[in-house]
Amino acid sequence: MQIVSLAEQPQHLAKLAYWHHSEWSYLYPDISLRDRAESMADYFTAESVPKMFIAIDGDELLGSTAIDKNDMDTLPHLTPWISDVYVNPAYRGHGIGTALVRHAMEYARKNGVQTLYLYTPGQESFYTRLGWKRLTKDVYHNHPVSVMHVQLAPAAVAISS
Image 1 (cartoon, rainbow, N blue to C red):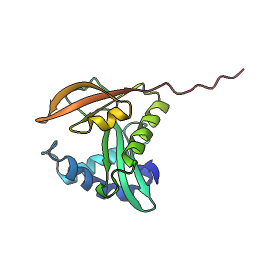
Image 2 (image 1 turned 180 degrees about the vertical axis):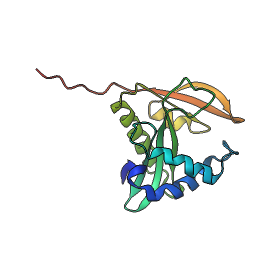
Image 3 (image 1 turned 60 degrees about the vertical axis):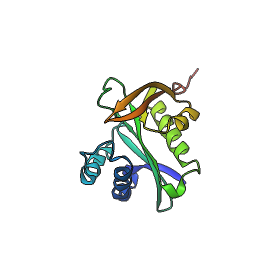
């Protein structure tokens, strides 16, 4: 398994948009599949954020995660966020989600991020095992969610003599 930027493997965009839409359309009922796919073009930027990572095994798409400037419009002061953590159901339970989240956390840390945020409607225990802490409980788009955060250690600085 490899974890790469979606920008390196753009042929997976349509399938990923379909997966994400199928999984989370209840949270965003006004967003069509087409809108979701078009908004994912934002991940094809040279900027460090937003960035989407995908797990692949050869040509097989296994899952995704992203780092976005904001993922909850009700909490615009919190930034950046991990979002779109998704693993193909056929591959769940094999550590792919953990690897994706850890990859995104390390990427953020290397880019100077000290605190990351996320919200989850039902996976709080998964993120807690990875070091995340609940910040608050909230209702987002009429659904209860846990808002979580993690403190990232600063990137090591080389000291020359």
